Image (cartoon, rainbow, N blue to C red; front, side, top):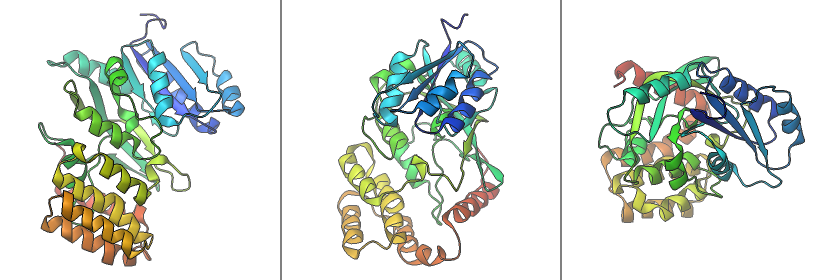
Amino acid sequence: MSDRNPLVTAVIPTCNRSGLVCRAVHSVLSQSLREIECIVVIDGPDMATVESLREVLDPRLRVIALAESVGACEARNLGARAARAEWVALLDDDDEWLPLRLERQIAALAEAVEPVTMVVSRFLDRGAGNDLVRPYRFPLRGQSISEFLWCEVSPFGGITGFPQTSTWLLRRDFLLQVPFTKGQKLLQDLDWLLRAYHHPQMSVLFLQEPLTIFHNDQGRQRVTKKIDWRYSFRWAMRNRPLFTPKALGFFIAIYCINPAAQQRAPWSGLRLMFKAIGCYSKTTPKLLGLCFLYVLVYPAVGKVLSPRKRATMLYQMRSLVRRPV
């Protein structure tokens, strides 16, 4: 199969990170699966990245340079619309793929007995000098995606998490039916997952092998690290029908109350969120315990232990007592 008729199209949105995106592109073009194309969507004026990518002499690379910024979500959508392959593989510009990523995912598709719209894998969370294999487990068959994402939280606040966006392989026609929300500044992957899982054609294949490196550099800002509790709360209220009542309460606690307490938000903001939990969610002892931790315990712990170190410790503790399924 020629590069004019690829099996997979990689889509990488980027802006003003020429060094990082070149690393990501090389990880795509070095895949063991050769029947691919790589589309980089440069989100707005960025001649440094344009010039850097011109030095990549591989006909499988296509660059779409936008005159104005449209945001990462719409940049992904534009890449999917321009793709020539049946399958679209997503990659953030600051991550990279391991060489067998696409080969393993396409092989799993060939062995699937039911139609599949999405293939994901574990990934290596690389930061602070060590690699963590995430997530430690995948959603169970029939489990609500909102409850998997947030109700699986440990008593100490450690969440399981869905496989990172750079592991996703999606049917192009499905992605065109369920695009990323244009203008979504934060919670981009979570917004897409909740909507996609409500689509009748959604069918996910999970691979145990870690196939992507998530570069969790502490000195560099990522969209996934940005937590704006006000934005998160407004988003959750707009999308209440996509949550189960139980999951909504846990989301508000984890993504809204927790950062609000760490940022010493006024009590009026916390009271509004507690009121929403009482009105729209299912309150459980575990949820109340988390709220206690977030409001009274962790702000004090944060003075001596960074959020990254605390999250790593919680993940390692869970890994010791639970085996992947």
